[in-house]
Image (tube, rainbow, N blue to C red; front, side, top):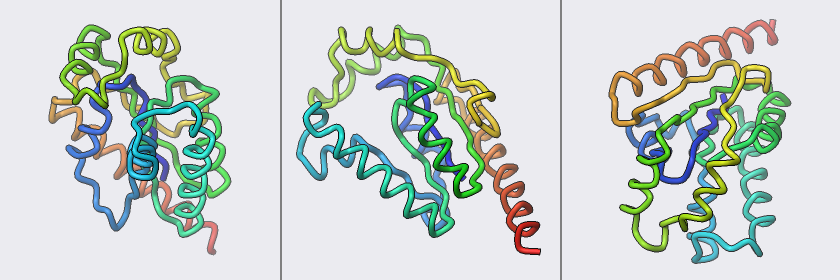
Amino acid sequence: MLILNIGLPGSGKSTLIRQLDLPSSLFTVITPDRIRFEQFGVTYDQRIEPQIWMIVRALMHGHFELDRSVYLDATNLMPHWRKEWIELAGQFKQCVLGIFLDIPYERVQAQNKLRPPEWTVPEEVMAEMFQQLQPPEAVEGFDRIVRIQNSQDLSEVQTIKEAIKLLSQSETSKKINREV
């Protein structure tokens, strides 16, 4: 399974992952921000973006090759950004769950200001990203899309867990049918 977060910086994507508390034996979380920081010591630098996304691609491919689920913790703002990941999941017959963090822009801005300085996104960049944000649609190749309006709401977290469970069961029966 592929789970794609879709939302602005500061919308609660990484917090949501922690709240879901998915078993690491079943789900690998790939976070480009973490790769940038751990490997290059920066939170963002345009000069290394091609290398970051090459690493993300390789990690996703490897986990799918081993039939493991991937949770991609990135903004995934536009359909053409999401397309590559959805197609990669399709190559490995993985279901795709989109989690759209549809958080009011004012709240995202406020949460962004609460981040540590090195993780705060400049206001002009945030405004540009807000203009780029396009809600996900099923026609993109999602098996299911869950829209979250409050990542602090435990019932919304439960909705995601139920979607993961249903898609996992669907994936399992597809695999059994392919093997028969």
